[in-house]
Image 1 (tube, rainbow, N blue to C red):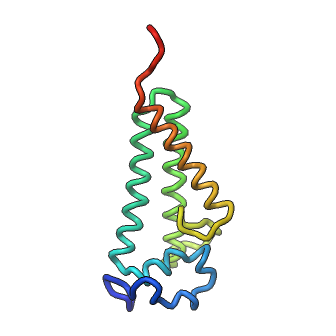
Image 2: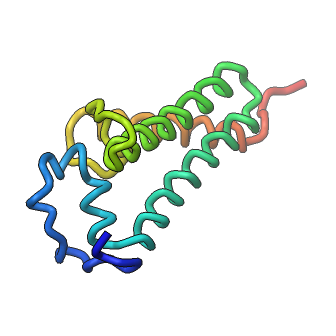
Image 3: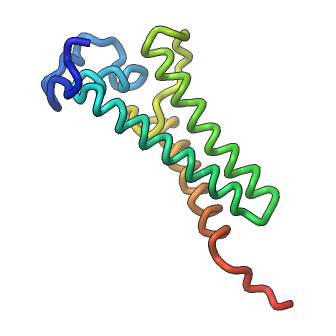
Length: 133
């Protein structure tokens, strides 16, 4: 709140005062250092990613791929909403990390694997069907 719309600057925040800043509270540290603008950029980027996933789900011709793309997009969206709500004190912390920002581990690997699947589904949805009639 004291950082203002532009934040304190990268590396200038007091993240060492936040417990578990490398895993559960990366959103808190990011917003402190980048401010409201950085918060909007981060959440906007996640929103674009979720929108692209839903777009891939709509474009897909295979029902399983449609469900998988929608599920992956919703997974990223729900994960982001849960951790942001936990960081704001609206909801309890559940151990879920902010997608693509937390420090290593299985959550980051799972998010990158899910993103790879989403990219594969999107690529398959955009390529023309090569089967002969």
